Length: 327
Image 1 (tube, rainbow, N blue to C red):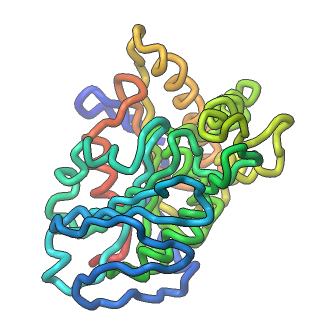
Image 2: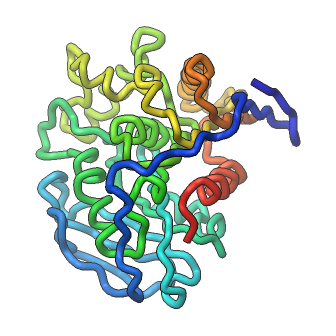
């Protein structure tokens, strides 16, 4: 593992280049390369609100049995600049927001600027304010099955309604904080779906330090679940193991892996003080296991705390485009 110091940042990268990944999952099926058109209902999703007037950012809100919101969960779909004129098929990035955020978050952080001129569709769905990208063990407020909504419904709906590569080499998943955990979880648990996975200040180890991340997930998810919990008490041990990146190392083989964690949270920012040291320790544990398995990755330890870093997002997006099938 080499260590460099470009512009005040430490870049840690495992030895060896990225392995070529075989196409898995959907067998290389391609979506239609027709011109842009209005999206339709399907896969258990009924569109209840939409806005397709912007040339790049299209918005949809759904009714679905998986999420008992009224109105239901929403998604922003950011299209490439030339989507309406090129007739090309594009790779897709699923970009997952953090806790107490929503599908609009990355638009407010200028994701349009990060992707301007780049041949990539970016899908930014609701994941619940504290949904943890999971189907919870219990809910007292109706269904909150974010994992099923995303993987069983939304991915299929996107491939059916947009010109995407509906295959392993056509998809990436990335996220911030809770969304970084969701990205790591989805990439491992749904092995054939995503060829690239990125966690920006996302926890990678659930059981370390007495299971601090599991306790945090249970406590915060109760806010969304009316007192229900993601993992339950006592824990659903099989579920924790299935979701825990450090216990599923082999499922990251043949994927591009990109990790970011902060090294110096603001001493007056209690949230960063609580979260980022745990994120950093967990990502270091994850990296050591990847090293032991000879699985390559790119990791950055950055000054600052639990924040979105636009330069790291842009670097990640460029790496995603390089890894995925070309438009």
